[in-house]
Length: 198
Image 1 (cartoon, rainbow, N blue to C red):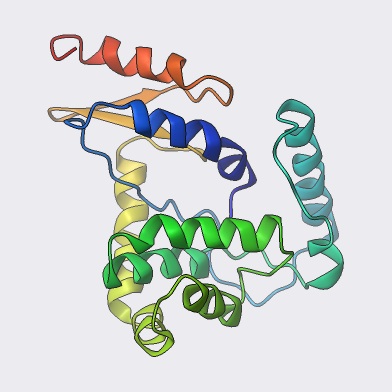
Image 2: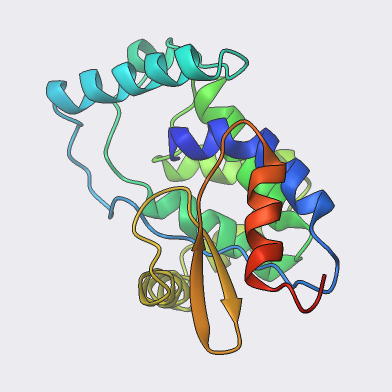
């Protein structure tokens, strides 16, 4: 549910395809905004809509459906979407990215509200996950605790913003500067940090 992560998706996909297979990759959920039933205040709504506009100026190929702000009661609550990704991953690793993409498309293109549990359960079903199995995991303490563990781990690695790329070399963590336009810039940074391998 991070709009900059949505904008970064095409470049990230190209980056991951070109990353050598012996560099292991793991996605961690950073949380962003905890659970709340409170409607988003007007200033936050305006700020997020301005962010969408700024993204479209910098990356015109990134699409947003502004009907979201009319059709929904937005909440600053991204933990449910994070738990949905973990539940999907627990059912089948191959569902992780499908669920992320379904949430992003639902939010940014279809004007669905991924802060709502019903939306997430519907999206899981759309990508072929059994609704009952998904719901059981989605509401479980196991998934809730996994999210808190991932938030803690991402912070301990130095991930302070979204999106973040962190390269682990032995026991050290190295931030890789995000480039929204050119995956080769990030690949060069990775190869510079692990030159003995490449």
